[in-house]
Length: 309
Image (cartoon, rainbow, N blue to C red; front, side):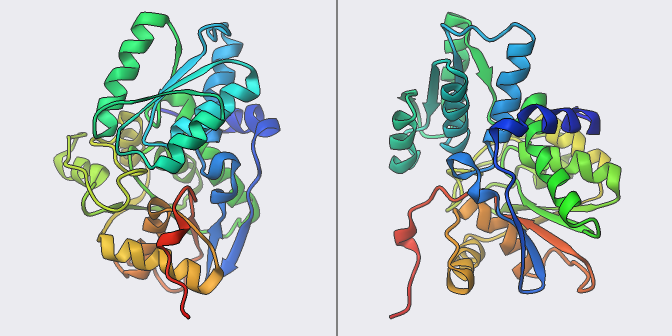
């Protein structure tokens, strides 16, 4: 579990290392442009907070370095944070990770190991590496420092848009959701948690009353492909005012295309899932509400977007 105090401390700690991304208005709602963050996603916020807190505690071995398991974005963030702080990074990714993300990991200087077909396979391999080497583990989502770092996005939204009533966010393993929901719970803001129908980790956990394993597939599986919601995210969901929404692959693809057609914004399917929750109407947000949609990443192949002749 994390608290608002953890997020506030994270904001101060990571400020020299991250971009303060813009919030802009279009089509009657606001968009948090977190796809403009270092490495193309929100993940550096959590990675920097994790490594900096480990360094403060004397737990960051500069020779052994850090290890992360990731479908891509968390690994990119961990590699970037490690390189910035001058420590080596090892990243385990599934064999299904996009080639673009793997190439970028290597360009950042990380040692990359492709293992299995899902995030869970990479996670198990990373845990073995930690046991063998003593490397500092950076969890993709279910670690207090990681979730608190992600929550700094909500602080920025509230600073720039004090009247915000709803924050819409995509959910995979739940680190981003956990951080945002923790802040929202203290500020009277509702959180709309959007997931692909083919990767409903939070939705199924809320229905079961506890985190459970789910089958994972679909267009957003490379970034929203965790099989189980994190414990920190589930705890945050129990404390916050949360609306859980499921969207289809077709709705995600359409939302992503819409951002390109209307705004020439290129985002990954995981980021488009948040907007799909609004455009589908399933979020049931009052038209009078002030809504901020978090566009959390842009590590994607733009060639899959259609440009009219």
